[in-house]
Image (cartoon, rainbow, N blue to C red; front, top):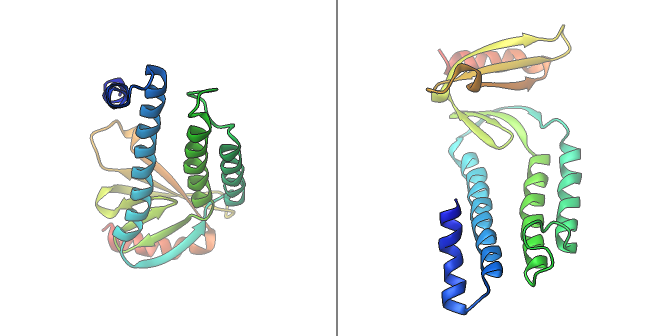
Length: 185
């Protein structure tokens, strides 16, 4: 990562005669901006790859809180309070705005996210879990109050790192179970 930052920083130094500190700030901004663009691309491409929606399970828990955090992050970014790299440089406000907008929009998007089953997998908030990646599943019942769908993913990583859990309302358990049986036979 340091090599990539260094290579990007050389361009403003050699091409525009910018000071090293400013070039490093620009480099960090380009790198993190690229990462945020990739994350947003994945968010929207997962929705496209999912196929036809079969069942809307539930909205994200604490979605209102994530929405509020997103709005606050955007405001703090625009006011210049989110710059942690180049404090008090001439790019400080720009870096703060980019970080605040990128993070804030992500939180706002998460606030409106849902758990849904599609023909190509389960869309959990922003991540598409393809049917081919699921090794097994089991239900954990909390005395009729709520159900949790525990998933085990395929892969070579240790078993404890291949687990996931999805909250499912009790009234949707039978529908989810029948879809899982259909796709994970």
